[in-house]
Length: 329
Image (cartoon, rainbow, N blue to C red; front, side, top):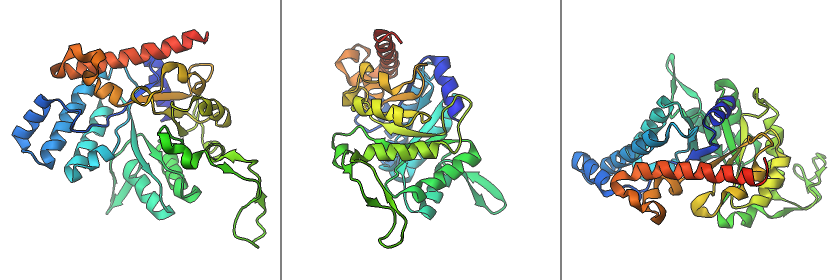
């Protein structure tokens, strides 16, 4: 799947992913009105509004972009109807030829992670049938519980030829509370007295240690373009950390959130990429799907919100291109 993503990036010339993270405040009134008239002011009505909103944006941008990233929490808030809208969105995006990154941030003990992996990337046995659940192409994974929480995803990826992006350095302001903590020398691997030895981390930040672990996991299978099906999440809001982690994880594709509304710009992103302008894909969510609410795109109006989203995608591509041109790459 990583090779498919890379080919789509090369074809479009756009190393970007549109985050389909809808909230009701982003959905224009005329879309909500149509949905509520059909389904009522109910969870079903909200889910229908989200679906109509997503469909319009996908239809307007799918020829420009390689991938989308629906954030499942934005759908879960509407209960079962919201999850149905999530699944409908995933299926529609795949029909349009887009790679779908399910932003689910799952990670738990082994058996639970195995169930999450099957739900989102694999197939579950139902009698004599194998049935796909949400069926994304990639998902985001939280490594906090350790390798036995990640390995079930890796196992399913191998079987299904899909991929994951492991959280390494996230874009949110408080990420450093844990991720920047220095891991000191002399950390014992295993319980005291087990004789398992010591691992020296030389006072490096935790995100770097996680990155090195991701780099080891990524060796398990690498695509024809030299990148692993096991990637990493590194926020655009931390460009210096991105520079370090690009070197730490040479075979891991980096999913880069934090562009636009969170403050990341094209010039912040250069070091996330390799010399061939590969190795990273940059996410923008609110900056694209709610572009019509931005003064810059106000001329489109709410009726033409999808056209505003298309223009925001074009502008993002231009910003990244200019950043590369500015460093002679």
